[in-house]
Length: 299
Image (cartoon, rainbow, N blue to C red; front, side, top):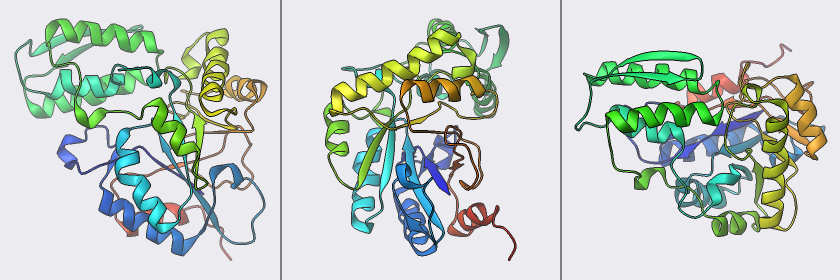
């Protein structure tokens, strides 16, 4: 199995509309349980044959809370992990990811319109932001559309919302790792760094040449930073429709040794450029156990 986490932080569930946050104490419980159930290996080793049930832990998007909260727990428990980094987020003072900015624009109270018409690529959505419940639904609806679009569609939608509902530009909880912090992580034997492309766009939505550049340019930028090119890439969003067969061929041509999706399943028998991952939420240990044993073959 390969497990996928995003943010590790003390955030109330009501303030986590995208379902991306696992609290640190719960993360500790997950790691302790996984260590009991599996041999834990780096993601680069998960495709090799193993005599015992084996799992790898991955964290996507390079949030600073990974370093502040997850890394100390991983070190303490001796759990290897791979961090998939968005190359363009390593620039000085980068803008927030579109879904984090969307959280401010749609969910934070303040001045501005309660109804906004937003164009996202070929889709037009009428967002009802008058109440908390309708705003949460609007956030989820627009997020689902933007996840299947390129980076330009997200910028287009955010520009409209910025004009209708101006909000402060960033916040502490959405901070990302700096280039220096990523380099330091990669130098620790317990941790690896992989590519998560340049702009975190759904590769299937991009023209072929642009999607190829997302893979090759991010690998080169990380190679310049780390001194060696990453072997692994995680497709942004990684779901059916966000990534297609040609992206696997392009990942191979770019020099990656394996590529990871966000589709749940066992690693055994999977193609090297479509390795399944289980996206973990704010689950109890019992829910985690159910997820990692769902594909177990009967004796």
